[in-house]
Image (cartoon, rainbow, N blue to C red; front, side, top):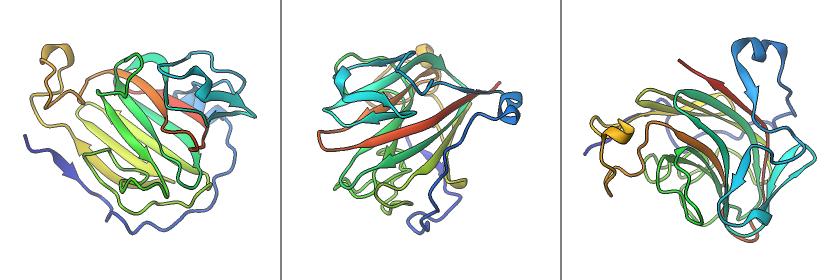
Length: 218
């Protein structure tokens, strides 16, 4: 089934943006409905699915630098916005999953992965909707902080990097009804609600996440 993709910015020509400063959850953000889902001190509310030692809380960040793991935030979400600051090292590889189902000791096979990769050999770079919308030039440098903003509402998923909209992806009709639609090989990455998860891809990859905020939408 053909996917419908609206590209609102030409891919592969994004200029690198300045380093993102450390942010706090402001009173204005709270009034708008934003909440922090990482307390800056420990991984309370999060759960590892493969290698618990791969992620740790350190200096107000979630740091991944061990073996392969996926760290799930254990609240199911449907319509929401997610903002988080990210830094990835040379040859590092990570990703932010949304609408994924819990899977023990496995790569997530449901929901969507938004790629985090500035220089790893995988051609799909930061901002790619993995294997759906491919971006071949990273919009940031190694070890440079940037802000990823993901909006999931209804049939649409939008991705912004440093406030620049990369694309809006629209789910094809007939595969978005969760339990009402049988999960098949063709549609297993589509789900109506699920979890946020952070990826630690391989030993030697060092990824850092901070200022992780969620706003639920109607």
